[in-house]
Image (tube, rainbow, N blue to C red; front, top):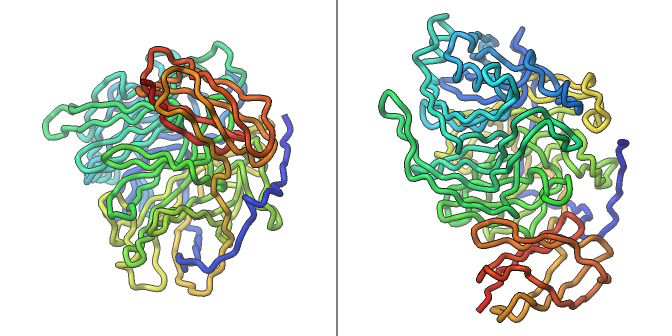
Length: 532
């Protein structure tokens, strides 16, 4: 397939310039750690300025042929300790560990979160010799970060610093792990076993989580355990993987997370554009807003200004369905590699805004990279940086390490994996105060609306009225209250402008359903329908 560009001329997506309430230039400075290999899609922890790097891949983006995708010899089988200040690194092989540990710890796209001195790692995908196949690992591993770092640096035994348990709920790759209060949140992702196949051939099985899996971890004894496990399912809004889970401070001061974009929509191989907020009390799809400039997992960081009650999330490079070219916003449905550095800001009234920053990544890089925050800065328990408590005009917020480097925007689409590699780069990321900064913003508002009536209704047939802002596709999803898709399809025979039609919910056994209409594969609107 060749890449196709679509130039957006709709007024709803026009760029605007504004005086920023985030008056900082972002400055990337290369850091050299001689001999450190390139990696992407890894897990990390840190302690006293040293990083612990676990798993990931040593090659570039995976090939499109099943026999050539995710080769075992490109699994990262070493644990690395990196000191970016002293420009040093140390390593130890995972092959000295028991089979369950060594196989999981060389996998890719693990779900991980550092809680104090413990790095928790769940799942991950890679070839496993014990299974003689590519699998998603069904493991939860706890890593003593300070102990393991010391052992690797001193070349002593690494075996005492791991605990691991097995459960099918942990078989997730491409999701994210976070923590709110005492509860861990395993968000999204999928179970993928077998060899990748772009044509959906029989070489693999795949099941999306479609869920937030919530539980507590007891790491106090010699063995791990979990308790209070619950699942919240939503096959419409939580059908996501390979996204950024950005820690947040919400306008009311509550700590939580935001799911940023991710893939794939149920009926089309395109990213979701709207975010989903996660709080202790539940999740909220923010379908009134679309984020256009970052769609896959990349380095990201959250920063909160308590004085203005504004939350800012930065995204560094990666892959995106939209990007700017000579000042024009381009839509490319092959979702190419991009250089974009962007920001999404949540204002004090909850409004979300997106901006292209005037600086770009130094090359087509950032996909599968991680942002490693500077923990010497004041920060919340979820690692959001406290901007209002920083008085310096220049300060380092963290580092970007690794990711996929490519010389072609369409290397994956064109199956030119030889043009990609695991990036060896490390960048120090600094904010420099600039009160005159002007940035490019995008109108991310949703122009599509619909109404359903009567609601409550006495049967399955209801009336829909909606306004189609222009000629485009219109799909529907009907979901049960427990998060399962009941029916889906395409709505035809409508025109731009106001429309009215009868609609069959096709749910005779459900008293409550969630009806979602999807306009132009990018604008989602959901209404709850109650049946008497």
